[in-house]
Length: 70
Image 1 (cartoon, rainbow, N blue to C red):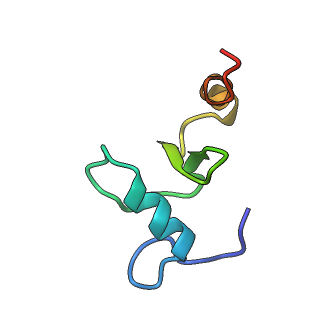
Image 2 (cartoon, one colour; image 1 turned 120 degrees about the vertical axis):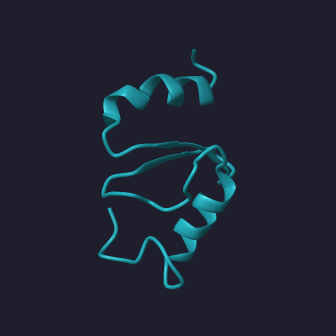
């Protein structure tokens, strides 16, 4: 969790600008709502973005694949 920061627009936090710029396939790059989630590999490369409605426990399969456990 972060303290309150800008996630969109000119004043968006640099890490969120980076994450949004690296992940493709979203009609809008804007973060729409709280609790948007990002999966990042061990080298700091964004792998996947999840909607706020996506349950954290449902990300485990993607994490296992990324770790080579699946």
